[in-house]
Length: 355
Image (cartoon, rainbow, N blue to C red):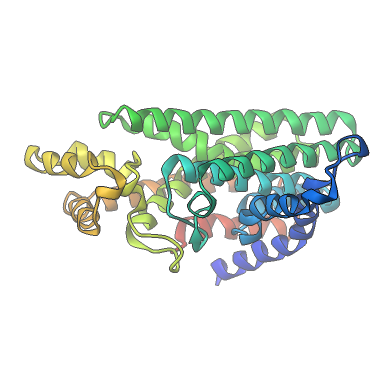
């Protein structure tokens, strides 16, 4: 029931935010008179809008902007002062996913073919670039809504969050390219903190808190909470990748096809016998298009054999418990209802979801 309640919360915020996002994306082809395109290029303009708006129109769960709004409202901030930042948060996800899909050569996104599989890498990259530019334009609108100091603080937080996320992606890509399997759990946590802890949980909540007038101490506490819950979120996501098709929207075992250095894979390599290590290495050294469903099944079966899936689930539960303790004891300043209770439901949703 709590999971359904939180899904209802996500859907409600998505319905509120989508008109704002849609309007901003549809303005991508509007230029001042001095650089406006001639009408003869209308087909090109229409095509550009079609490609750029593809991922946003598919929509996602809207978890990040919802956490932003729940935190702002939970601290007494007004929703209309946070909507622009929440819209920018969602747009950031769409361009990041766009570029990630190209880097990982993913087959699908939100139940449809990945953008680069439809239009090719060049046009997909360009669409991601356009969304990136729109994101910063939306953020600049805050200077018309918020006081200058707060608007500037939002820009700085966004910059830090995005820079840390992109750094985490870069490190992960390099480790993958270098074929590194000697990584420690601490190395894995670095990726989880950069790409999920900050970007998915702490960053959105900090942005909402900044709009509500949070102190630096409060923002630091939110970061500690977000890093722990982000670890749990990503580990659960990686486990689901091996056990669920996300309601038919995603191929199972995608992380194995893409050679992602997940906690369960690193644990498997650490625990496995020399014979099984060789088998694992032979599978992982194959290119994506050379791997088979049977290869994925072999890796998953070995993870079950060595307890790597159970180990990872225990870790996810542990981090979630630690996060919940911080929320209950140290995030009492997020006190307005129903927003606080909805955030608690969000913690349970993140840990217990099955897709």
